[in-house]
Image 1 (cartoon, rainbow, N blue to C red):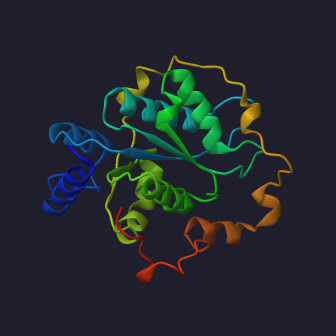
Image 2: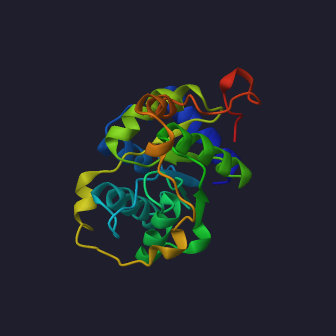
Image 3: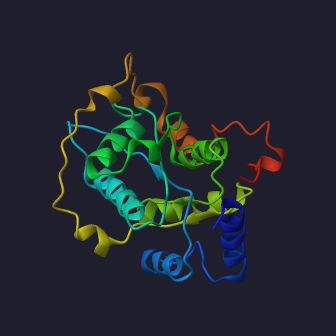
Amino acid sequence: MNKILAALTISILLMTGCISVSKGPHKAYNEVVKHDVTFDAIIVPGIPFENGRWDTVMKARVLWAYILYKNGITRNIIFSGNAVYSPYNEAKVMGLYAQKLGVPAKHIFYETRARHSTENVFYSYLVAKENNFKVVALATDPFQSALLRSFTRTRFGTPVYHLPFVMDSLRKYEHIEPVINPESAKTDGFTSITSEESRLKRLFGTLGRDIEWKEFDGRVLPPL
């Protein structure tokens, strides 16, 4: 299925209710499989890398991205996230783990500007557009997926499907603990966001207040 046809197919399925961004993780995944929907790329938001190893949330997000790639659900992965709370660029750290799991580097893309969850999707969508990706999904934990649903529903000219991780699928891989050298992801001159922004400012950032919309009519990104 070519990119234009795939984008049209998923748009029709969303509009007719055959698949839905509001379904639970199992239903969302099963409907994608049932309708043979594949994605040009999935968007995976970052999480701080601290204490020299991935935490539970980063592990789950990277493993889910790997599962979706391995199962042929997505052809590429966009990891997103700047160095926000620690000196390590979140997107690059996740990319290192994904490569250790077996995802080829040529199928990993990086978005390194985002400091908040809404920005993860916003800037990754632009990365998708730059690379001529027509069909994209947000692949993260169910909680973050739910928080971002209103944002993805109203701000993007092309639907962003939600594909939150399925815990049963992750359990099969929970024993995996790859070791990476994170030094290539370390940022020089790092300052934590907690030293630059108040809690209120960070909350506004999470809500998308820091996104620059001036060049986009109606505060909506154009179709992919």
